[in-house]
Length: 260
Image (cartoon, rainbow, N blue to C red; front, side, top):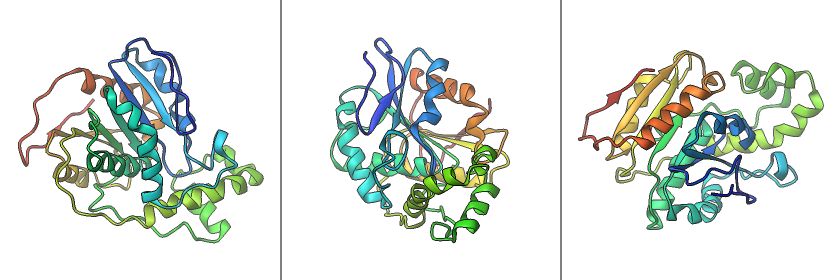
């Protein structure tokens, strides 16, 4: 199957007859290129990244600071994918985007993803974000550095930071202004990925089970909030195994835990 290329979605390789299309959503301030290396770890999945405004090839476009507007645009972009097997992965803010987009897909009556893989985020009905998007420049940069949101190499180039900050502020506003709306459980398996040293509470990760009528699993990795950078091969293999192995739906209250 030829790789996908649009203003909203881009895949990194041609994968003949993929078992599933894995659409990935980056963390706040991140871009789709963080998933570029994932394709080399799988031959059965086609890895596709969300290309959000305000970064990379869409740098000239203002980032969207509102989750409803963002997921409405993404719904249009992913609708063609719903005619075949697909799944979502999201890290931090990207996990929130993936969850709310899944809800929009259900509301639209479209086929749902085969799996929802969320990393570095507590369950949406529990999550609270630090108010940071409107901090003064230097305070925001320090906050990002402390939370590993900016690489040390980036900090050496103030002009690059200033180029990125409007998008980072918009992304943080997406998360900070989020208000959970109660919903019937999604009939989609949820896989929660967690960094052992992350401030996100792993026990709260199990609360994702309340949002699905399917299986819910929690997997812990060594590392902090950005553990995905250190374990991309293991994460891709976990996702591949989950999407190519049939498992029974869980009963209410049964949370499976796996450790790799």
